[in-house]
Amino acid sequence: MPTPVVLINERTRKLVAEHVEVADTRRARRRGLLGRTHLDDGDALMLIPCFTVHTAFMRFTIDLIFLDRDGCVVRTVSRLQPWRTAMAWRAHSVVELPAGRLERCEIETGDRLYLSPLREHQRAS
Image 1: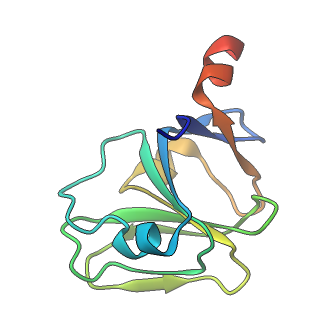
Image 2: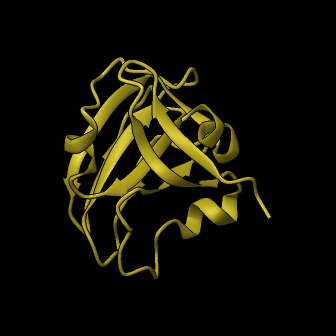
């Protein structure tokens, strides 16, 4: 079972997602969020590597954060509806979040996000 991880904004020190599922295999990236009816607030799917996302066959709206290899935000997309696409050429990974989460987390282009094991985050809190 993979180690539970959280996603943190280095600038604000705010938690972006409390439960991050990392999709770092071709099969996991291809499946993505297909078949799900929603993402709970605080959940996220991180696709690595990835620079383009489609929401074909999806049932709900999502927010996106495109990150470069250093974890810096190169683009954000709020409320991407089903049957749409979004991309960022410089991106190395994409974080898919529940719609509205971007606004609440105050994420800006240039922010650096990083993954941290849940147990380390709990000790630091």
